Length: 354
Image 1 (cartoon, rainbow, N blue to C red):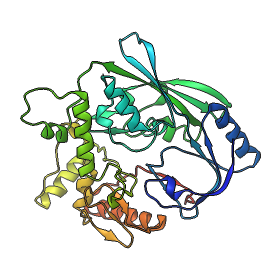
Image 2 (cartoon, rainbow, N blue to C red):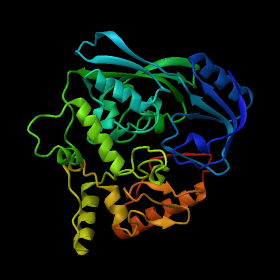
Image 3 (spheres, one colour):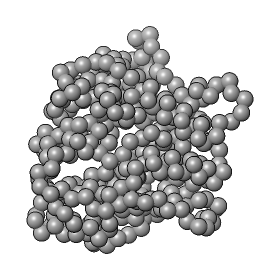
Image 4 (cartoon, one colour):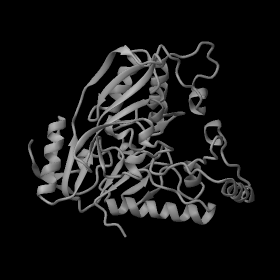
């Protein structure tokens, strides 16, 4: 295990912002993860676990302790099938998420094809129950292997124990900071058909007589994400972001009715899709755009993507303070106009809690 000091974190994130880590280790084995934990404890410094760097905002001051980057790789398919006929894939937490999706699609196994193009690593997917285009990773996860910082043991958590719900799990709620994700086992459907419920995908394949296969669905998702600036493309300024910065709000019946009346008073209609209607989920992008923050909006070196209203972007040289300043403006304005408080998706690293 090699401990490095004062390592810049900005290049390790898709936002390309943030200060340095006091100490830094990339662990490629479980043993190195355990050694890193011991180092942080004996040095009496805080520990932060870094994955693919795609869903976080690092403070300008950086991280005062140890940043542990999980580099455990490998995609292993079980030789046999699960009792329900599923194909099981055991994947290292440091593996590229999109590489695993590509691997699954090429193996003709359905269950994650609509999650194509999402940046980051496999270990980050259970934390926020990553979802897109009608699929959520929790529907494919069988179990998660973790290092439990509470009792210093490696454990396996079944799907139910992870407490998955919309964009959340025990890993970012009730047990935040307790577990380090080491490997994830996914149960996929061999020979299964692609999941084509989301409106964007339906429109993409509209008029087609035959059902698209998994590979075609994956390419369609990547194409749609690219058009929205949600696919990491080197040199594209809209890609210097953390992806969707705000969650789609899930409203109560009363809240939804209040929002409908506010929209009606402005002679507007709230966008309605089957994927949203099931839980009275509202498009955060629509709320942002109809609060004065159009695509391409600029505020200093921070701004809104020219392709998607949900992505706050670093226009070049932005500080974390500028990013959070724009975030605060958006939240305040949306709440004033629509009575809805937007919740953020990215993990905030190194900020002093108030």
